[in-house]
Image (tube, rainbow, N blue to C red; front, side, top):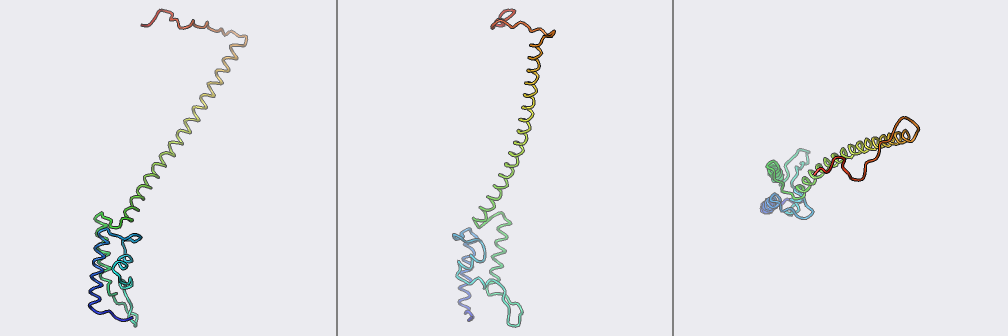
Length: 165
């Protein structure tokens, strides 16, 4: 691969800086993220220029645009620490994660409510069954010959001592 001229390098760096400003301002293209891959695509520079290289003897050397990649990462980290998310997808992911957490909490509350209502229903049914059994026992005792007497039934809607009004 041929080396690039200084003029081409400066043009590429200007394009990278312009793309960096756009991406960090939140102007992320459709299907892109706030990352080096998108930065390289927007600036028209090969992504490999952002990463360190190796000489023929195996010693490391910086990539031609590695310092710009580090600057991009620093600025992105500073924005995130300030509470700003330049990538609308990342902001949406964070919003959806918090929404899912809230929904999980609501679901857990509903589950505990259902358990409590199930216990209440079981207690109510048990009490109704016990009351029904008591009513049947009293009716049988009333109908059997014993020393239990039925009280006379009250007249229709007459108050024993006059009206209350």
